[in-house]
Image (cartoon, rainbow, N blue to C red; front, side, top):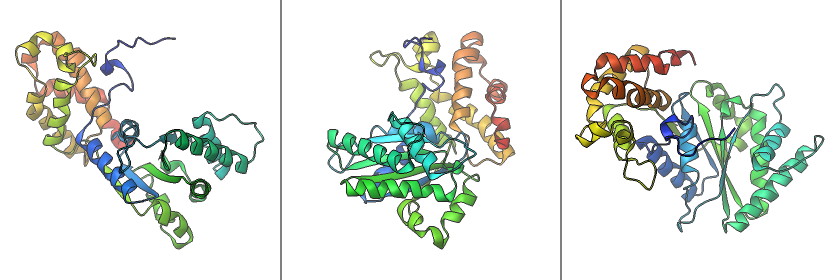
Amino acid sequence: MTFDSTIHPLFKPFGLKLPTQQITALHKTITQWIWFGATGGYIEGDSRAGKTTAVEMLSTSLKDREGNILPSMIITVPERDNKTVRAIHLNNCVVAGIPFTTRVSSDALSAAWCFCIAERCAQEDSNTFVLFVDEMQRLIPKQFNAFAELHDKLRAMGVLLVVIFLGNRYESNELITEVQSNRFSHIRGRFFVHSTKFHGLRNKDELKQCLSLYDTTFFPLDSSISYTEHFLPQQFLNDWRLEAQTELIWNVLDQYKKDMGLESVGMQYVIMIIKLLLCDYLPKVGVERLCHEMVSKCVELSGLQHSRFL
């Protein structure tokens, strides 16, 4: 199966990547960790808040103090019945594209991955490598030793490995608590001294900035056609802007947020709501009919009401 690269980002499952205020703040925080010499950190956030997308966006633009792009990799911890250190090394090699035999030892896997990373750093003239570990809540405490081992081996090769974990709020609490105990002090000191929280949209100002991106982000990139204009060309020509609908849309989202006891609205749901409005409702019925009920219907279709059970 082939995919048409001309398909609008709003129609691609993972194609929409907007530089929201939260992503910009996260980029700044991680950069500070790296510049201050941290060996790791932990990003906590609600499920569907947009953590993975945020890391996918910023991982390719992290820089050292001299302005050089830092090499990085994102791995996702798979759910396994057998939670071992070897399973971590095996997964790392799969992501890095390193071939191996089925009976290869844990030592051989970790060595192969470290040599691969050291070679990549040499090619990119960097002495720092950033490893993002997504779905941290699927780990058990002893598996953190795999990352400590990789850190030690790369240090011997002259490479600083910075490991940044991403975990779902609540689901990771028990794991974090256990890591904070004295018997895991060697893990805590390396990877859990620094932490930050990643949120969805919490207030009207954050929504306003997000909606403004639809009015100012172009597709194709070399065109002057914004996302909003693509779906509502005549209305856009008549000065209709999605950002100007912030008050109405936020009033609906805020009510759901309060009723559900949420601290923020996950970006997955916000993106779906705006997609429904721009691609389906408004082009068919007209922007003049945008109302509380229409936005509320889009919220229902987005699945936000079921998010409390995730």
